[in-house]
Image 1 (cartoon, rainbow, N blue to C red):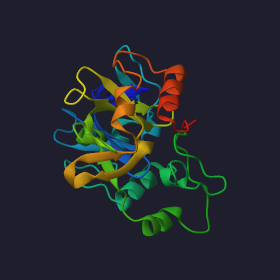
Image 2 (spheres, one colour):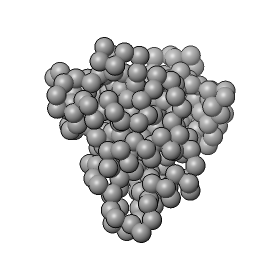
Image 3 (cartoon, rainbow, N blue to C red):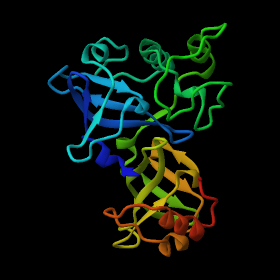
Length: 253
């Protein structure tokens, strides 16, 4: 589990060379699943960005901060959705998955029920199964445009407990196995100096995007006495157990 700010900056290497670095992560605001990695192509394709599903990334080489990608540069260069500043629509997502011949994430995982035999989100990309209907057309028409948010964007959002403000989001913690945002890292320094805590986005009551505020179903007292989080620490299951036991919520696992 890594902070999104640490994942940002990793290089992506295709079979025949570097394609750029991770600039941002786009997540589904309903389920907090990471849907896309935004790649800044740097000097290769100046001023343009590439969208890749996180399932296209192989295990990272942390020593050199690099993710291998099982594609060649020409494939990526010719892919749809290449733009400097363009909203991500369902049609764009469908076009990208169709171009690569991969199964879209909405066939399962993070609240999307998986039809029989479909590959769940988080699995490596595969060719979509044959269907009597083109699944790309069905999904593009039925699901509507995705409600995607930027991990970079939510940094700095204020977090409100049931009885007042507790601080702001300093970072988000990403589970790279399932590519899900498991925790919001909250800095309480403007209220309770010198402490950082982890809050699960599953505990949210409401997000008011226009006000840059997230309301969570915990009290200030619970936050004040919660297990402290040190950004340099490794999050293990024991630490997660202590968080969920303290707040009284059922663990995600």
